[in-house]
Length: 216
Image (cartoon, rainbow, N blue to C red; front, side):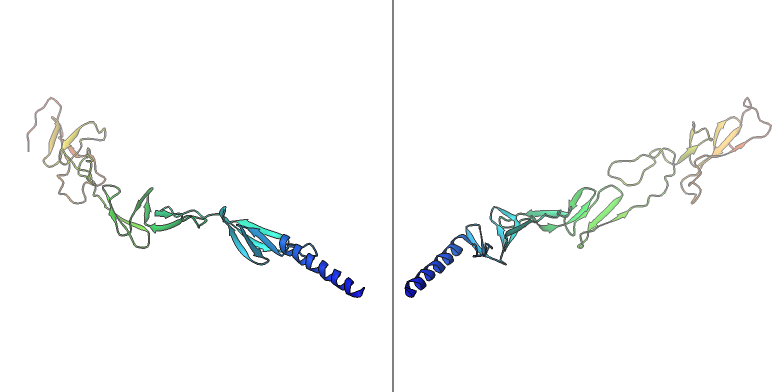
């Protein structure tokens, strides 16, 4: 009788172990394994879901505890992006320099404007030299495409007076009327032009506009 009882108890224990192994639950109802990706994971094991490589899970006694990885933004100067099938986030394989919305290769020299000369340094930073144009020796400079500094197509000149209605050439004195003689720089008077866009004028004393004048 005792032998039969022992055999029956042994059979029940084997059945309990089989059920525990098959369903992943302990006798107390706790999880011993987790099933995912067609595999079985034991408590304490970490794994990524095959259906979502950004989701990582840990098998715990209460079941799978999962969290999703958020990808960080790629640098704006990334020139080559790779996204491997087994990776969660894309990778930046090659970086350059970002300058005003454009990306340049390391070591590349570029000219974003007529007055700028830039180099994409090896540290990923674009460094530029900016030309410093001298004030043009005229009041009507012309900016031409492809050139940094303005040019005086009509030569050096200035305004005859503060009304800025009459422009006279630089160099020799100019009679703007029969009694007034004006002169602006000729482009060679260093320091004279800057801030002096109006000519220096001399009015002949005791002169009326009906009188004549000499060129002296």
